[in-house]
Length: 176
Image (tube, rainbow, N blue to C red):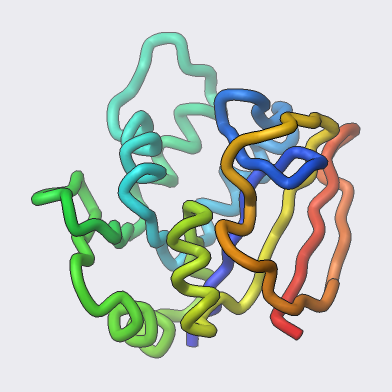
């Protein structure tokens, strides 16, 4: 049975914004390995459109960026959207009955399935389908933006804390 995991880079004051801060080389290497090991990813439309950046090689990329792109392209993706009519390679469009699709993925897959996007994570949290939350805390204060939790924070229990690099720690929680 697969485990549904929601994890994102986050500011100290609880916001996610890929344009305001990014991973160090060590943290980026961690994400490359993490993506390589996933059973797949479930994306909301907005974050999927951001991630489509990795569908095509860019001449300025370094070795780690090429490795991430290869890992991202190889993993199965499910994109939750009512507005998209098609999705890119190795992706499946999910328009209706999100709960049934995720329950089926959990039952049929083995390993971790990543959830990308706070709004999608909120929907899955409300359905009781998120098994683990990973907060990658960066020493940045944004003061506003998109919060990690798009709705009320569910009751959580801390199960791990890991130093990821010289600046970032990962806090791992499960539903309490």
